[in-house]
Image (cartoon, rainbow, N blue to C red; front, side, top):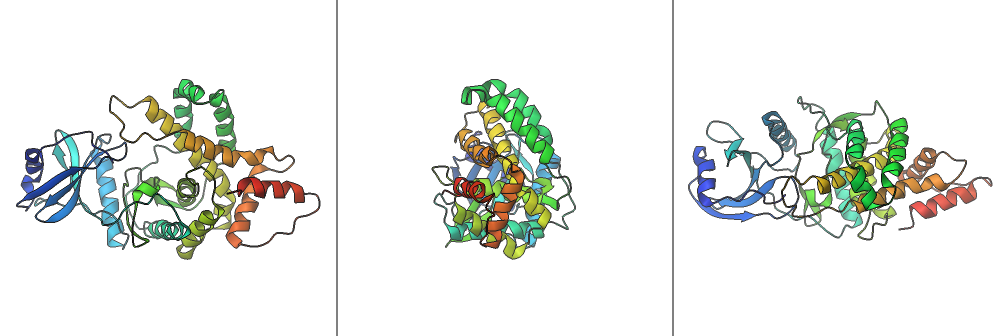
Length: 356
């Protein structure tokens, strides 16, 4: 969320001309994010969110996002609800840009993540996944694995400025991920951007999920992998085993992961880390003349990708197999008796992966 388009009270009055409202109490810009312009507005003593779509010009896409929020809300998922005008329309215009008025949710995003927060977000994500199976609209993931090659090629120079030889190293990593990527996991509508700033908490409970503007059809386990990368690394970029366990415990309370999803979760984590690394570099490279309010550092996801890669240094054991083994260990919270041959290798893997 951010403010790229500045509006006056007259602009808002013009937008609201087909609504049954009387008084505008206040207009406050929300200076967060990089995608859309957002205002908190007070109308007739009620609070709302006004969103002006800066980078979404396709009306069908906007309708998809708004319909999804309506669907989730009717299925007890706490999220903003589009407010329709007297003509039953939820999309209008401000300064020739598509705009929508949404209900306001109480709560705040958190900066210090604890195990209880991770458990709650795991449950919230699983609740969303179990309640989209009957949502009839579909949307292709424009930032799926099929699009990462184009992002990689378009940002060669920027990647090598970020780190020497990074382009060629990521080329090798993308090839590895493509060779291991699943094709037929359980899928449906995913959030695809459920970072801490897109989750509101009130009294340590999730009070709302927001910012559905990357939502699309993809694997549920891929959505979970995004959350793992977004929630399970602390401010020093160290992986937290405890947060990870709590996140998956909460998720599996409402939706059990299949053996196949568990098998592929490691490569999905590598893939989602690569996706956000590439898009952050691309945003850094292509701001389209718009000042980015909150610059998002690509190095965060470069470090997280390296975390997923480091197991490759252990010889004679398939990297993905070890990661699957470790995920299974944590999910089942069990103790594994290592063989004499593999004891040292597996111990190094555990120490490297869960040092935090």
